[in-house]
Length: 144
Image (cartoon, rainbow, N blue to C red):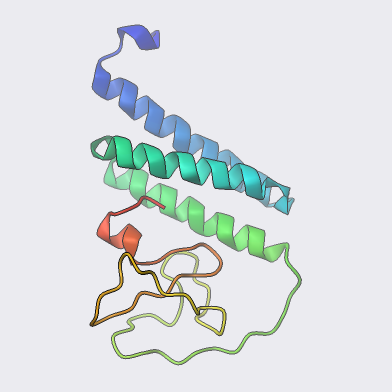
């Protein structure tokens, strides 16, 4: 069925599916090479822009799947970097996990940045150096 005859909601859903598929393809490519980093950044940017534009067209499953893909992408791109030992950091007051919620990277000395958008006085969200996860995704401010 041509796109011109589809209802608006279905057109938006197809845009979402196409953008997620684009990210999935980049994740598959990242397994063999880190050369897809620019393509990945564009796919992530496009998905976040689409989410800001038509947030209601994203199902809970779309959001979950996009975050799973983003976690795998971070892990795979990091695997192409030279291996270096890292010192694990202790959990802070209020931390529920000792690793990134999305890519499972253990919290270590690389977790230095705090997100100004989702951090509050009571709790400062760390930004994962591998997949850039913070509390913004959990709060629904951005998709991935």
